[in-house]
Image (cartoon, one colour):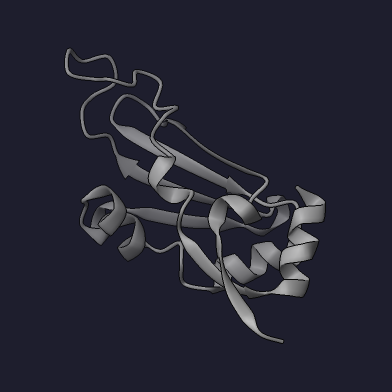
Length: 119
């Protein structure tokens, strides 16, 4: 079956960011379909290198973890500025997920249809 690029926002049930303390941000990428979750997890799209490139960080500063039971990926990065500091434009870190939503994942139409049904 032919594969087509799909944006991460089309596949995930939820993509969000939030503080993980005053100096870290965490991103949760949650899926409603087990096949789509495993495809994205194994696709090498959400990696330390990719996230580092998106956020201008060294891959060594990025942590990516998967939680199979929750069909979720968790990414943690240092905040660009401490939460609540004078130059902080997003005290709660809730607006930092933007660059993630347009990551492209190659998948076939059957899996894409299943993902759309479960979101």
